[in-house]
Image (cartoon, rainbow, N blue to C red):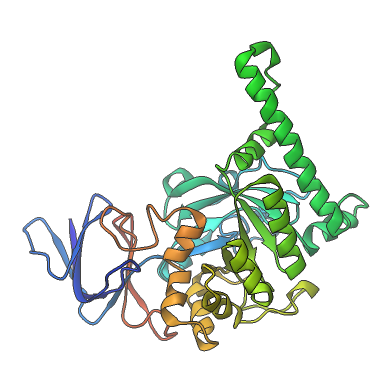
Length: 385
């Protein structure tokens, strides 16, 4: 057992401690209290003067799939050969030896939601993974986590160059609708096949994934920057009664009232980057604060490698500088990120029974001068300064 004592604990749950203790046992948080008695079998870390927090969560990245410094050989995030590829799985491309995982955990990012890029209308299945492990099976928190779909410039640019559909936003929406309609028919055939085995359809991995979307098991992770693309994503999700998150949401702050009305969660970013395409022209670090103040649940992402994943807390800090409440910014990279992506039962806050993903800092984590001192993932010390 490991006892962390005398630290300033921000649980990101109901209670925080100016001076408190956390007991780790078997990879889980066993107890949190103002004081915990030291026993002989405990390893003790005195966190006096330190901030103690849950590990940060990047709610949208491509870490391990676009490997750092590798070029084409390490570029496995976009299989841009067909506009609809729902059966692709991130876990079959994630390389745990991508150096970016090491940089992530050394800067306090202990969980990454990672998956396919946005070349295709339907790109494939995301996963939530820890940033430490020798093989992906050791790292997975939840897989599949969501199905990536993309609106706006990217899919139409990729396929219009090949004179294939989609070359317009209409085409993108039509491809997604057609896929979901085919999945509805496949689902009907499956139900008929359960009653009469002779009617069981031939197995189709793409359709199986989309049926999970229709059944509410798998949300759509909707890449959408421009306001009209965000609204198209919501429109189609409502047509088919499926769950979704808005990822990027670059112009979300311009329609914040509508997003609130629709009950949409937004994973915003990347913001610490150039306006590299037209749909980013209204990008602003004020956006997370505006969305949060409107009452929308917000997470902040890096879209690694667009922004290197270790700068996730820097993005949150700049959002505070531009008007976001400091505690809301911390929630955006901890508990909000966990709740939006469906992994809050394990990570995102320091609570008894949750994974012992704990980071000790020598100051405020949103101060650029602050350093991580200790990083625990699943109760294992994976970094010590």
